[in-house]
Length: 163
Ligand code: S3P
Image 1 (tube, rainbow, N blue to C red):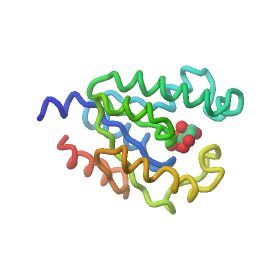
Image 2: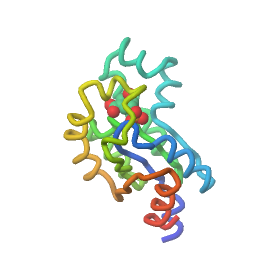
Image 3: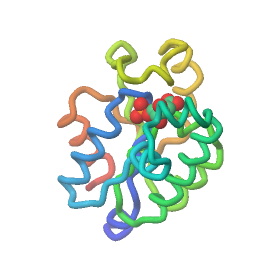
């Protein structure tokens, strides 16, 4: 019902470069919701950039910070939460999302994903990453939204979630 739709968080998942942060920020603004970005929360918590966390502390440490960031944001009510593409690497994150959120998979064509600025996650190639992750995004999500442009994506999310 209407109240449930207002109190549930909206969690955006999908490949790096699929538009989770851009779409999430715009959607939150439009709906007057709080916006969180797990990558941003990690940078704040670690006091350094994501590449530096990977370089200095390793991926395991990064994933721990990521789960802590998600746990913090997922406690909210009615927030929009953009995640990192690797959020599906930890089953624990799925439980956090299921608590009080609707998961939206931003499904952008692989050839439209920008590879620049994302050396860490895309260094083994977008195809390998997609093979591993697309099935997870699909099974974790409540709704799947094909990404065309920001406006079209937002409209479709609003329509599907009746927001
Ligand atoms: C990662 C994706 C990045 C960021 C980190 C790891 C991944 O987020 O969390 O570099 O493993 O796919 P974006 O999906 O916003 O690029």
